[in-house]
Length: 309
Image 1 (cartoon, rainbow, N blue to C red):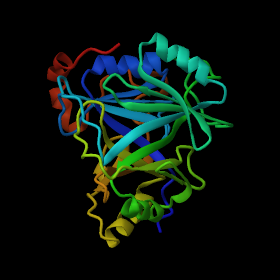
Image 2: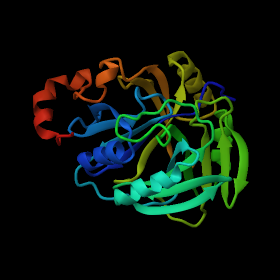
Image 3: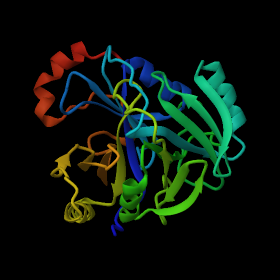
């Protein structure tokens, strides 16, 4: 069993409009844009990162906004709902805030005994806020959300699968433990994790496969401390039969990827070096940062990419 993983690192999704996406996560959800860069494989497309003040692993939502991309089709083999942690007693505030912002799909409910508010992102993305007692992770309040209401980072993510057997074994191999099961959903938790500790597996045997598009999660990333721990995880996964990519330098972390039995793309990402490697903390996410191999395209990209506030 792997013991190097410490919870979620980031969640990466697809969007249609960079400016709409940026406004939603900064103005509506109150997160900080901690990096404005481009897709390594498609440099004419932004890669935007949102999180707490420094982009702490376990707090970072990232997006590839492809202009004019078709909306994704929900189904099996994908991440269903991305859930953020907020302080107890704050869901009334968030209900008012999201209502005023025109967010769709607002629904108050409970999951595993926790109060939750479901809502949709600009592209139909599945999100929820869940009240968590004594989540002492740092919050970002620079965009007008108070300390008593601000998002603390991820709480969980759900996987929509036709069959949970092989994926349950994978999660246990990755260090997760089954902590509960209700109404067709099995919750797995990471003991001693970073706060972004839960994966919920939704078993849906009769739904068709998902189609990737705007509003879809592209991949789910799990956190390890450093490159040494990452290589240990890579070897363990490969020894178990998974096809794992070589280590890829993503400038702000190193990454490896593999496909789960249910079809979801998993990443293992390092906590190092972090988003302040090329920007002062006070100015994270302000300037367009380009991977070295794309720096020669700067003038073209600055003209082509949609301006962001």
